[in-house]
Image (cartoon, rainbow, N blue to C red; front, side, top):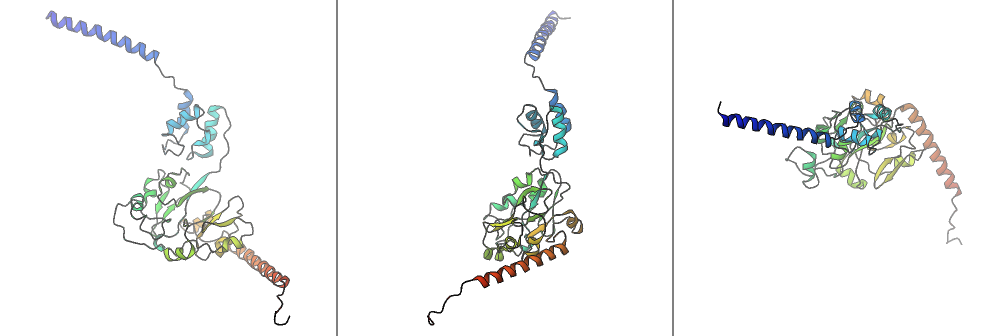
Length: 316
């Protein structure tokens, strides 16, 4: 064998040993210790990598929890069960949180009038950039299904009326649809609260009537007839106070445009998973409404009898 080749091989072998030893020493010296709890938490998480926790993926959240930068309940899709398991790994107690789901604050769709024909990219965010959207109502759903296509859990689908339908059994309350909606007509509400206002408009009633036949016209009938002070008109729009709402259904019954909907399981079951303008117990709601009307009549009559009479100046 040529001595030049043999020398080169020996030289390469020596350098290889030196570099290998150097890498081994560097690996031991600069090793990054991984807390075993991170891997344990990763095994608990749903690994949807939705980002709802505010971290870049489930691994970022797991590390954040171990480093006390996030709470065990921070994984929204995982819910309470996941929070409890993470808390057990950390040896702490998870705080109880109310599960939430996304509601569609728009019942317009084909009932909402267009101001021009949009022929661009089939993405709500792109359509919103063109004249603040092609709907007369700038607050409502554009119906192009961006939220449905980007939902990581397949909870949203588009109806024949060009409105998103949320499958509340699949919805984890991650909030991704809320974040990406350009008109902000999606909102997270407590899962256990069935009644909500399916309108997002801040316009006055007269304009709403021209823009959409299903919008809130701020008539205040819901507010006037609610016995529990659970719904109020703010900025031309009805808003439910869930801390006071008893789900009596009066607001649904008196709304002239049927802009207040019910997502109670029984209602969803009878309407193919779509919220409807129906109270949970129609008979009980009607009875309660009759009592409210009678009370209002009595109060009006009492007020009329106690009103001071104005003396006619011609007879003075």
